[in-house]
Every structure is written in structure tokens, then in C-alpha cells.
Image (cartoon, rainbow, N blue to C red; front, top):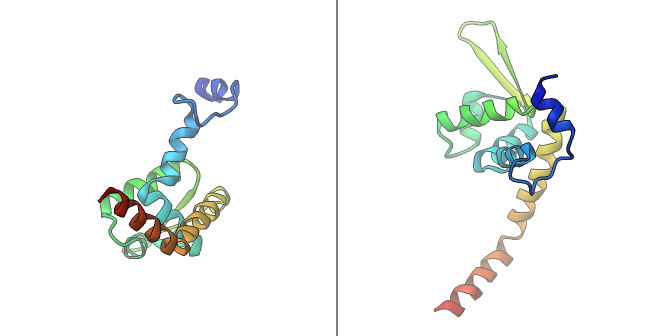
Length: 129
């Protein structure tokens, strides 16, 4: 265990503390692309190009960065197959499945609540007009 790991264990994680590493993980999981990548990988494993098509609008660079970050945090498993052309598969780890289940529930709740959100927006906008 490295010195920072020992120091981290001396204090309970507190996402409200700006110095707590849990805040960075929260940002990774709830980022624009992080949420969508986790939800997609919760459906099934994907190759990079398949995942890029599934997560519409993400650039190749942003997808690569997001996958690398989520892999580093222990949420994504990257498997390189020694074939020609090279094949790389991405899937969720057990920790990633837990996180994906939670953010997927929020995303699906938002989808189901869009009529109420639209009404709230219209009401708000009409008060400001």
C-alpha cells in the first residue's frame, strides 16, 4: 500500500470535502459521457467502435478518455485480444455494474419524467416573460 492509500484510510470518505478523492470518482461516474458509457456497458460488452455508435455524439478522443478514466477507477474492464486486426472489448467489472445500475435508474427516471420537466420549464419561462 502506498502512502496516499494509508492516509485515505485514516479518514472516512466525505464527498462534500473538496479534498476527498470520492468527489473525483463522483465526477467521473456522473460526467456527461461517463453516465452514458456505464449505461451502455450495463446492457452488454462492446468493442470501441460499437460503443461509440451506441453513445451518439461522443468523439473518439472523449470516449477513449472516459473509458480510460473508468478503467482506472475500477468500473470498466478492457480486454485486448491478440488478433489481427487488434480487437479490444470493454465490459463492466462488478463495481462498474453497481455504479451503472444506479446511474441507469436515474437516467431512466429522467426519461420517464420529461413531461413533468417540460411542464415545469414552460411554467418557469412564462413567469419570466
